[in-house]
Length: 152
Image (cartoon, rainbow, N blue to C red; front, side, top):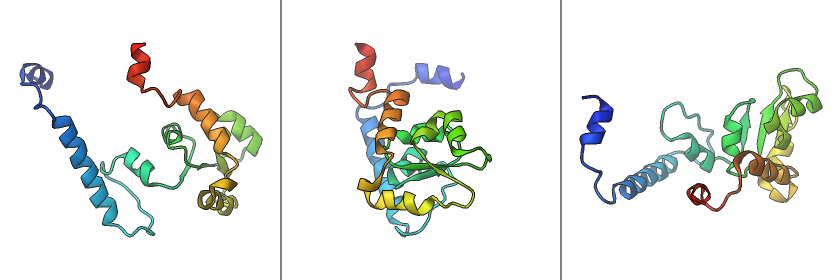
């Protein structure tokens, strides 16, 4: 029997199993992050912690043009996109929809100080509205939960 058949013929998971797994996962993530110096830059190269746990822990994202940005948008946090293409900023923004709400970083990283100030002082974050609008356009409304929207 293959895995699908074993799942079909196997017993249903024990009641409360999903909640127990969620609690164990949350405890593992809490212990993992607590074991690291808060000020130290972290590079995650393994399957754990998962990407969304890293997003939850991060203050901002610096990325290239990729689908990771769309996932990060749900956090509402600032992000920057590296423009190493040589394109002018306005052309770069028009070419990649997710860049509309990003700080565009040039190879000299001149925009990093302003980006960090926007993280430290959210009132200076001039792109918060753009991020919210982009998240709504790409991800849909935050509520009600997708299951409720789908059932309607």
